[in-house]
Length: 265
Ligand SMILES: [Ca+2]
Ligand SMILES: [Ca+2]
Ligand SMILES: [Ca+2]
Ligand SMILES: [Ca+2]
Image (cartoon, rainbow, N blue to C red; front, side, top):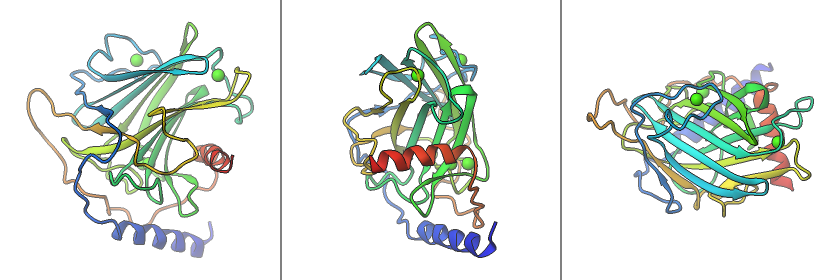
């Protein structure tokens, strides 16, 4: 890794962090709000059991091959996501034809642009998961610290994606939220295999996958335990990591390719 490029990228990212105003956590998006506390953590095994996701906030919507249901909930540390997606295959052809569930965050909850420093996570076919961020070139880069876990499975004619992400990991390339905070979110379902036409389905359904405008994204409110607050963190955008290592080749390279492709299409 070229030291000067690393330093330049780090400075760019650091500058962007310090330019972020301490915006109030007002709701700035569409009307859809996910808010649900997980009494018991779901198992990330690629099987969406009704029982383990019974506490989740959900939405079901139409996609070209049928329907998709998204599940969202949190406990005191993690955000849990699942997607049950109609699809005739779950496959990958030499790392280019992936079925992927991607979650883009509006970390600052400003409803403006999906831009440098924002957080994104993905779980794809062959159980490949990724933790990335928007880099200085507005492409998706791998975090130096991966704070996700997940699995994909196939049940009937559905692909089941399950993924978990710390909501206050301390990593500057991740969202940083505490109980009660609201963050913006967009869900992307890439169907790159098995269908006649490669598709990207988005929730909210009127959000364009090619558009970085966050004003119509959905919201997640980090739910409080029915037992009351406990152990909440410090809040604010993390500045704990100044030296950000940019990994040029990795899982995010695939997403970066897809993102660039959809931005140019
Ligand atoms: Ca499960
Ligand atoms: Ca991370
Ligand atoms: Ca990240
Ligand atoms: Ca597929």
